[in-house]
Every structure is written in C-alpha cells, then in structure tokens.
Length: 116
Image (cartoon, rainbow, N blue to C red; front, side, top):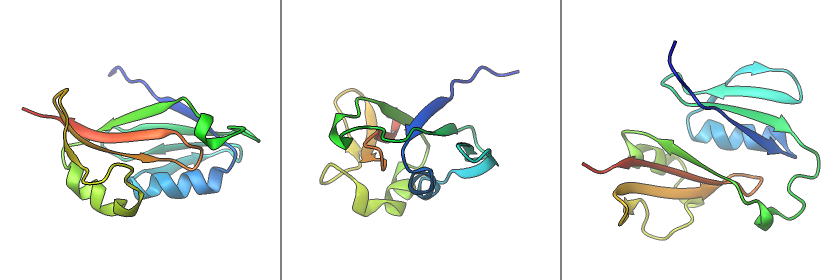
C-alpha cells in the first residue's frame, strides 16, 4: 500500500466545486450526496464535503492546495481565464513552475512542478 494524503475541502456549493475540479481533470468516483470523492486516475485524490455557509466571506478562506503535475501548461490551458497571476504559469524563485487559481469557496489552488 502506498502512502497518501487527501484533502477534505469544505464547500457551500458542491456542484460548483465539482465543476471547478472537473476543469482541473478530476472526476467523481463516489457521491454520497453531501460528500463527494474525486480523483484523476493518476494519483490526485480530493474529497468535497458540503458545509453550508462556508466560508462566511470568500476572501477569508485561509486554506490552500498544491497539485503537482508534469504538464503544467496543459492544465493551465484548461483554466486560463481563472489564473490569478498575470503571465503565469512561470518559474518561481523557490524552484517550481506554477500558476494559481481560486476554487468557488476561495481556496487557493496552485498547480505546478519542481524545476530540475
């Protein structure tokens, strides 16, 4: 068995969050109504849980998620209009090539890879 960490992300709108993560190449593998399990078939796993009223103010969501992927540019092309930083993806001083978007609940999602 491999080791794995899975983020459980609260959302007040499961359908909007699911649609957002589908654009990042996730698909629903289990749906329990108020709780959905998503994966991409290559190692990414994510759980969405219904949390009415979360967050109270979208700009107050303090959480983030980092997704590592080989082809950053291909995923960026799928969500180009949602990218927060102009000119991204790009190389960062900390040794990654990445971009960032916000999910419907204001969660910061960075997608990138480690530079060689």
